[in-house]
Image (cartoon, rainbow, N blue to C red; front, side, top):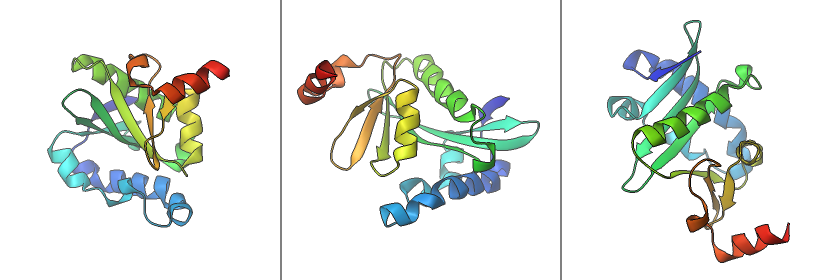
Length: 160
């Protein structure tokens, strides 16, 4: 398994994986999820996209955006035919390593509240929720969290 910067030759695989991974959410959300509308050619040109490759086949993609105080995990998608093999976990771990490599103390991820399968996976990986509006902001288990939790979130966590 290799995670490497994406290049222009990877665009068809990236677009296919994103389409296949997110199509199931269109009816649930009522519109195509944001990752289906992204300009991956621009993401590749800006060096914001990486691919997970196995034996020469692209099986996953991750998009990381540098913000002023954190790295934003903008998108992570795995070929549905490869689900359940730890590829999503590998991409998430890559994001955490890349966050530290760039000198950030925080990584953020937003997901739609109706993407319940993804939320369950993020929780399983140790991320915690902080719900602004209809998106769910998640913070990872390894990076500082307490300063970003609301009082209500801390209160709810203390009751569990």
